[in-house]
Amino acid sequence: MIPRYSRKVVKDIWEDQNKFQIWLDIEILACEAMENLGQIPKGTTNKFKKKAFFKVKEIETIEKKTRHDVIAFLTNVAKYVGPESRFIHKGLTSSDILDTSFSIQLHQSSLIIKKGLEEYGKKLLSLAKKHKYTICIGRSHGIHAEATTFGLKILGYYEENKRNLIRIKNSIEQIKTIQMSGPVGTYSNIDHRVEKIVAQKLKFKIEPVSTQIIPRDRHAELFSSFSIIASSLDRIATEIRHLQRTEVLEVEEGFGKGQKGSSAMPHKKNPILSENISGLAKVIRSLVIPALENITTWHERDISHSSVERINAPNATITLDFAIQRMINIISNLVIHKENMISNFNRLKGLPYSQNVLIFLVENGVSREEAYKVVQDCALKTWNGDKSFKENLLNHNILSKFNFSKKIDQIFTNSNLFKSVDLIFKRIN
Image 1 (tube, rainbow, N blue to C red):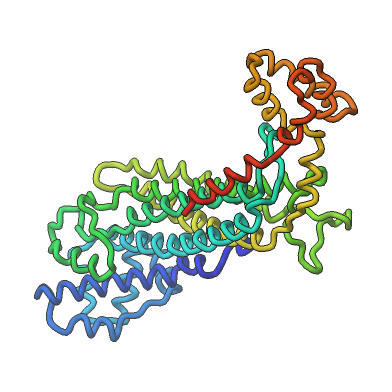
Image 2: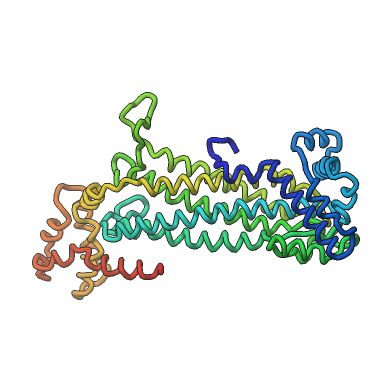
């Protein structure tokens, strides 16, 4: 990923220095396990630990000749270790190191993403509680519907984020798996206890049937979770973008001191952060298809998945982490225009209360079909004329029969909404 959309904490996980260090740690753990099982000479691991070293540039130089990254790595380490290096990688195959390392890197980066989602959830809940009773208009198809509260609107995103946390926790468990089963996964030249010991040291599980690679359905589940999380961020980003439109202006992204909105129009304040998240979500979603296609490999092993993962795993984790942190910033600095929420609510001159009137008529013995026609006729007059919904209702001959004028204030009310707001908020605990 380009630096513009990267945080160092996740980017460093995918750098060669960290990758090769993980490889070295795995090789040391394997040697230690073999030594404890009496399969290599006593003291080998200590000598290995003292001398083991590598240089990324040297590995790169060796790989130009070998065209095999694991062999290049082992050759470079052997240069520093000396005679004991003959016990390094004993009975193992490249995928034992590559797939175990890949699981570790995915685990490291996914934990950072999970932590970000937890912080994001706290910000959402705080904002939702603050605006629990802040009235705003609800919209369906982009058109004014009935009253809701801004707190309820945000609470929905909070609950969605809770589901995303469950998804990523489950997906992390799926990729917390290692393998050290040798060529085609049969343990032909390595004791299965070595794998078990290494897994225990790493606090990972062993892959029950590895074939020679860890099955990629595990990784596809994680990338699917990434994609859903990205879509959730995109959903709230899209809402913020709509609500910041000039004609609506119910919320605004924070605008920093010295920030500029347009090179040509100095007056502009644009929802660039939310737009950015919508763009990044497209990138993350696009990576789930290659992850699903990686499930299919030839026989016990091929490397058709490898090139995909070298690109997609860093891109997905770095991008998603960045998007989450950006959304945390947006929510933390979101400007709420309550006065515009009220103004927009009143813009249709009482029409959001149309269902209240419909129910009133039904409860007073009017058939639903006739009641709907009466209310819609009055509503369309309001749409097309200057009079308010109340005025058009009061002028309707059917409504006058029910002493409507004395009951209108009870009908044009949001009291039922507030009763239900409390109920919904209690559900999230």
